[in-house]
Length: 282
Image (tube, rainbow, N blue to C red; front, side, top):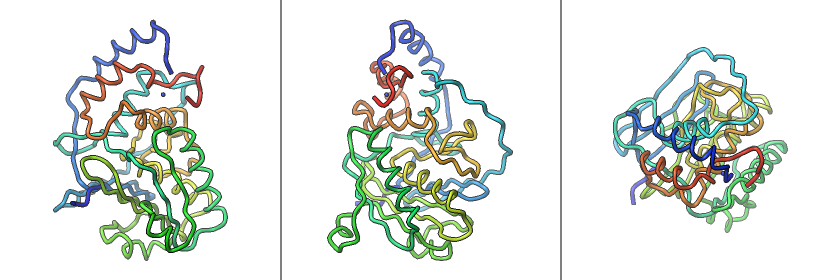
């Protein structure tokens, strides 16, 4: 085994949605990889590792002021989902949907603050409210729990990151390393810095890295209020768009291994995957 890193809307919207699907059938840069690393630093980084190679992308573009709409449109949800769940800023191999198909059991190690643990519980509760197909659990510190864990979250100084993930890239304050097999994620290690960050910033890191380890593996410069914003932020909540794509990924119709074309066809066949303001939380 190799290491490997939304509601129903009316017919009018449905017709517009089907039309919009066609605009997304275009060539894009795609990627593949067997291990994914999500990293957060003051100059944002994203890295993908293949079995024999690690690649890193660093960016330093200035942010652009973003004024979010009252609620993300169907087009925005589709576009953002494709960008965050399967998109890539480099590479030329086919990208695929990658997600968990079993519950996540999170074991916390290191030196978290009381607020860290409270924040983690809050985030897990929010995610469990958004996702119906798997549940997230926080384990106690017993030996049995350690053996059961498939997500390990370390709260340690940055200087200790490489002890837990040898492939760690220096300069990052949050780091998530994900393994998958046949495009199904089965294990993750998350690193959260306990130095050089405020409590608010660390709370943001917990939210971002845990969420990205679900299979939403990319970042974007498009929405400053999104937890997936490429540049450094201390966003403390999921935007409406974030919630929409989390629910979309974990809808049963979206399966591990789906290509971009299959995702678009599925979204066309299942318009209920698109969130609407009139049915929050479904």
